[in-house]
Length: 325
Ligand SMILES: NC(=O)c1ccc[n+]([C@@H]2O[C@H](COP(=O)([O-])OP(=O)(O)OC[C@H]3O[C@@H](n4cnc5c(N)ncnc54)[C@H](OP(=O)(O)O)[C@@H]3O)[C@@H](O)[C@H]2O)c1
Image 1 (cartoon, rainbow, N blue to C red):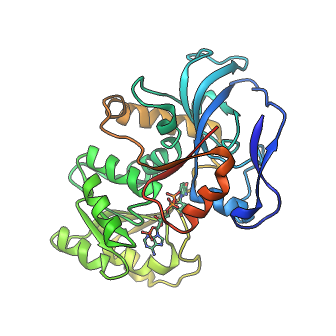
Image 2 (cartoon, rainbow, N blue to C red):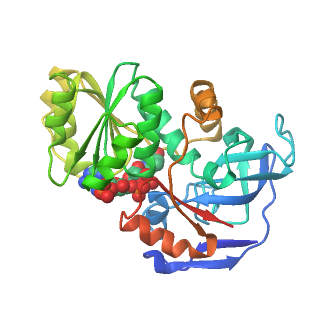
């Protein structure tokens, strides 16, 4: 099968289209004939050697895919060969065939093309886990989400709206802010010219956000804490703005704030299966009815993975970049 591998650590120029042996599913796993995969910021970090795959995961890039089940491993119930599925992967999505535990599969609604479905699992499940399960965002609450135009941001805007809550998002241009508002964000702040702490305060009449979904880290840490309501939760999922910070712990204590660090990829298959079930229970109907959809910026052939990584690195995209096999 054809797959994208990393020749050595570096930027997008280290990606290679390679011929690899077809993988076989173990017990509880399925083999998917991949129609499409999608690019995540984590793939760029992996190519640079900054985010190694967890033990047992393929070295090949790709955290999600969609396609048809081609083979069932021993003991798989509830799925059949030929089923249209999307999958959350620990790696190996940038390929013509992928192996995944059946608990990480989601059935693709009939009217959702596989090329779009491929862009759903990683970002929608990450947002579900961190904003709702860990962050506890409730109906009527407000979340601050950084990078509203990212894969994560475009999923967050939709799930938050669907849950009857409000989002304040940040983005790096007025154009991306306008796109976020059109998608359903309540407030969008251009972080190059505006102040998101002020925007959250204004939107919540001084109360603050219940949840902050943050992928920036150190650079925004203090301002994120200042954006939170009494008892608010800051969920840290990325460190694009650095990892080292100093804070006044008194602020956490007196305002009863929580700071939660979270990754999805390295979790055991049973935990991922529980997250998938939780997502389908809560948002499955919205997905089937087309009320939530991955936002696709562009679709490229698998062989153009280099260009796809370049686009993400330059933040030229709004939503997701898809790779079709
Ligand atoms: N922990 C987990 O389990 C997990 C899972 C998935 C993703 N993540 C993390 O979530 C983040 C987003 O992932 P992705 O794949 O959706 O990435 P992506 O599509 O590449 O988006 C990154 C976004 O960050 C924005 N950005 C850059 N600097 C910013 C700043 N100072 N303030 C606000 N926004 C800024 C960029 O947009 P502008 O043009 O607006 O600057 C860009 O849209 C990454 O850090 C990724 O590692 C974590």
